[in-house]
Structure formats: C-alpha cells, structure tokens
Image (cartoon, rainbow, N blue to C red):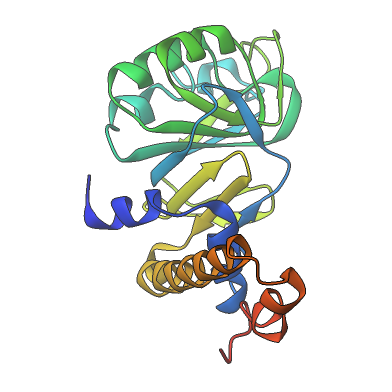
Length: 221
C-alpha cells in the first residue's frame, strides 16, 4: 500500500467531502451505496465506460465489459464503471467480482445497477452501486472504453484519481490535488477529534460546535 493510499484509508468520506469543499472541488458521487461486502474502499481509479451496443454487431467489443480493466488492475486499485446511472441492466456481475477479488482489487464503483451481489459478498469484494438487478448487460450494454476519463454521477473521474467509499458515501479526489486535499482532510479529522473529546469531557455541544466548527470548510481557514 502506497503512502498516499494509506493516508486515504485513514480518513472517512465526510472529512474528504469537507476538504473538497474547502478547495472548491466537486468530487462527491451521489446516489451510490454499498451493496456487497459493506466496507471501506480506498484506491486509485481504473475507469470503464459503458454504453448501448452498436447497431453494427460486428463493431462490438470481442470481450465482455470490464474484463480488460480487471486484468490490468490489482491491490490499491478501484474499478470505476460509468454506466450512466442505468438501472435497466447490470454494469457489473458475479464473474467479474470473482476475478477482481482474486486480483486483490480494493472494490468497484458502478454508476448504475449491479448483479450477482451474493457472489461479490462471498468473494469479499466491496461493490457500491445504485441498485441491485438480476438483468444481464448482454445485448443491452457494452464497454465503449477503459482507462479513459469518464463522467460518474455528474463528476469527472480520470484514471489515477483517488477514490474513497464508505457507508457515508463515495468521493473522488483529482490526482493533481491529492496532497492538498488529503492534508486538509487530515487537519479536519484532527480538529473534530479534539471536539469529540471535549464533548466526552462534558463541554456543552453548543460551545464545541461554535463559529470555528462552521468555518471548517471555509477556504480562508
């Protein structure tokens, strides 16, 4: 695990979201929830772009969606599937989950539906998506590209961006801003830990959560 990923894993999505706010960066992927192996995901994005099958079947990819990204990935990587929010068919399935788990991939984020979630959970692969579905992608969706910049839940995600997911949500930190956003999130986390100890010591919460708390995401702080 690289130092950057270790720092990311030590945070939660709320602290990172606050840090993104402070730096004026949009990076929260809304509407996604843990559907298998409900645990944290932290790593660098490996992107997959899905879309409708081409009218000319001869132009369709000769391999199943997501397979190239899985084969190219490993520990410290997170597969991010741009499925345009589709819930009419799955953008991820069980055999992909088994392969991803075998390669040590940290988890999968799908902007759309996923299926075979029992298989993913049994394999220990964390899957965050919009909804479960039993409907296959075959004949409904194909891979248009992988390893390219995509749009997920209205947010641009590039290969190598940092991805963090936990029960609080899913956030993406652009690689170019990783150090500054992580440093800010770490500062916010430390500040909130001091506040939590004060509450535990009996300080009134109205005092603890005063003006300084409201300014935690202020870019001037």
